[in-house]
Length: 434
Ligand code: S3P
Image (cartoon, rainbow, N blue to C red; front, side, top):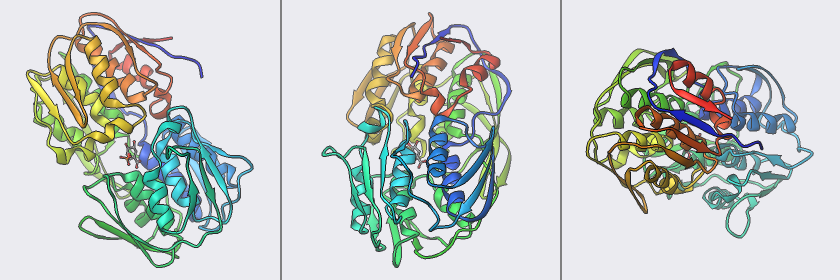
């Protein structure tokens, strides 16, 4: 992979209207469910990022006819039992969502598969899916450390289970539910805290019955999915960089259009509002079972807060951006209950604390969070450790920095937001890449 470096300069602002990249979580699920449904599914607004394209390629490798023209995708569903054995192992790049959700779905097929990924993905914990799937009767092995590659042996008979999830993870929940489609009896997952519910919503949209009682979500194996058209909203996780950027800079005013505001994803809005940001939610509407709105954000003076722990799973991907907001706020921001950040595309607590320190900010990492005292950002050289969200967050820091910031190892921005630099630059961020 060619290395990409971002260089960002002070005195930018963010102005105008934009639509950010399509929702990554919904794009993955649209391919997966479209592939195993009966009939033709059309997707619009599909995220053309490396992660979701890895999912698309995996299903093509399993014999599903998928045509893509930019962000429009047509899938000829093969039904629950129509996937074919791929010729090779399935390479899933940087994408944890692809690996964890596919491990559930592929545990139930009548062929063997191997799932691999890039150096970041092959360090990420997979026992969180292999343990419950094995309890269902799957035969699936990881390395001794519980990391990829995953070897999945087909032709197993799966049984429904009731699984109490030890961590709040939508990937684990979705993996088990996808296996549950094929299992005998009922499969239930109990969440310790609410996590994104796109799988449940989309399964229902494809005509599959789902039951939810409080923290418990259940489905019965042996049903069918029916093709459906999906309009993917813009990703609130990609909007987050611009929400923070406009909030921390002076003279910014930005309207981010058609953003998914599913209540299991809006922790970023609640946290920024608690910090004193000025964000208005406009034109709220429902698009195919997912709530969508335009977000109008203006410059504001932020203050440090203690982040409520119940908001952590609802903003899990947005903490790199939130840490930048905290670095620009008056006073101290304290995050606890977020140990999951240590096992994302990078250790987001350590890598963000290291980067903030380079910029002259007092940032103290803790085992499950961080304490950040707001201050004047300087400039410097940051290592994003190949983590897309860290690269984009530090790009926004330039809006309040005194000196230029160089951000290394940014190629993976293409996993979730391929036109980030182009869009940020059009809206007024001083950014170059080489
Ligand atoms: C995702 C769930 C979250 C999130 C990831 C996407 C999903 O991961 O961080 O970017 O699409 O289900 P966890 O389930 O590990 O929290």
